[in-house]
Image (spheres, helix red, strand yellow):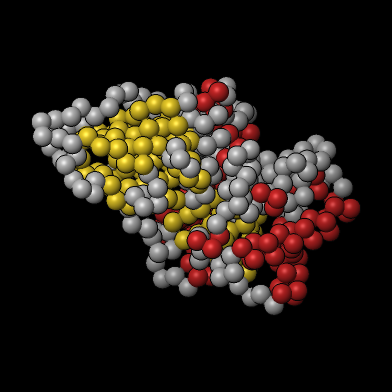
Amino acid sequence: MDTNSYRQAQPAPSRGSSVRTVSLSADFARIVGRTLTDSRGVWLVQSGSAVEFDVRARSASVEILGGYGHMADPAFRPRYAVYLDGELLTDTTVSVPSQCAELFRGDSPRTVRVRIMLLSEANNGPVGVGKLTLDTGTDSPVTAAPAPELRIEFIGDSITCGYGVEAKECTDQFTTLTENFTKSYACIACGLLGAEYSAVCYSGHGIISGYTEGERTDQLVPPFYRNVGSLPGLDVPWDFASHRYDAVVINLGTNDASFIDQDFGARADEFAERYAEFLKTVRGCNPDSYIVCTLGVMDCLAEYPLIERAVESFRAATGDKRITCFKSTPQDPADGYGANWHPSEVTHRKAAREMADKLRAVLGLTQ
């Protein structure tokens, strides 16, 4: 991880300058993914959530808010990145409640596109983007970056989060320092399609049980799906009416397998039934989206037919034809592994191409 740190300073006023502050909101920034806006700023909650905007100024800084994640062990603090004109400025974790982070400084006005993005997952807490402080003489110095027309939501677990994708060894344990959503198949697939993404993903979570040697009913995605996040203060309703997606991808079942496989005969039916129920929830929240269900990057070959059964049950009960499923190609040992045997960066890139091809097919895209 690049640990470049910011200069902790406000922009220095130049001769004839006008220093002003701007509170970020949807009026001034393109807001990507599930976020929460309050009086302090925009909180990046889910993996990959971001703000992106153009700044016209001589110099600029932004307030970064740590929420409660800055109090965690350094290995588990929320990780975020800042990009200027597509180039990485910094990649770090929050370590203080609030800091003023310099974006750029100069003597002449210039226009810079800024993107601030959460790299780690919702389980480890949000990062807030507060006020911008600008040295500018422009009446409208901050404008939202344009948004792609194609929009895709991904519902998943650690695979979608990019868990351990930057780890050196398969036996490495989880840390936010090696979790990076930009290297997740979901983010890469959207890049291939020129699409905007939104992710709802929680490591260790499933449909009927989280990853376990027994049963984990406290780690289920369906109860949190309608909310921005799951942590206290973030478990507020998400505004689906204002966020429409061309497709919704569901990649769940990998963690359930640890529970189902303990007694497959007794638990397979419950998984298929609960999966079908979740499909009704997803459809209710996304009435116009094409739903794509997948599983298989981390094997779970016995569970994939249960997803096919759930999809057929959903079709039969609802008459809904805008839904399909496909089995993802399992990871190849030759491509290496991330932490705890999770997909490597090579595997994610392969899965991204496979996913992009599937989405092109179901959405009738030509690119």
